[in-house]
Image (cartoon, rainbow, N blue to C red):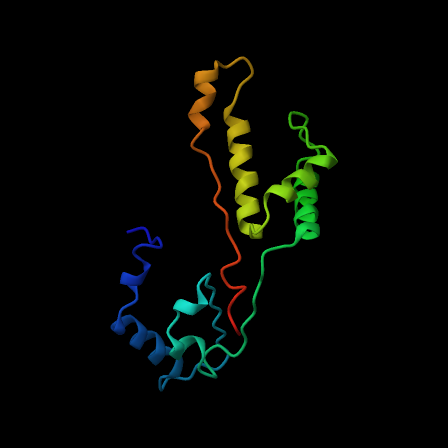
Length: 152
């Protein structure tokens, strides 16, 4: 089964939550164990996990990158592709990409680059327009921003 947003809630049952909390708080020693959790929806977590001291002692919010950070991330990708003679990646493209990726997380920007590179890798010069349209399904969705309104 592939977990997606529509069936994630069905994976979290009272039995699963109880088992998880018993592992954290149980009688067995957890010395030297570090538990790292990640979520895009802190508000959906059981308060017994998200708000109780000693379970997750530190909460860090990683907001979506601002314009300057998005430009810098595009420049990082530009440097990774600098040795590739088949891809043109001029400096002004970094700012243009940063402009259209407002509220994207770094992960979504990365996915946009990877998806674009896959389309480029699959394309050939001289292909008919209809053949090129087979890659029209490649899209990225707007991400980030979900945690910005939460009080931590």
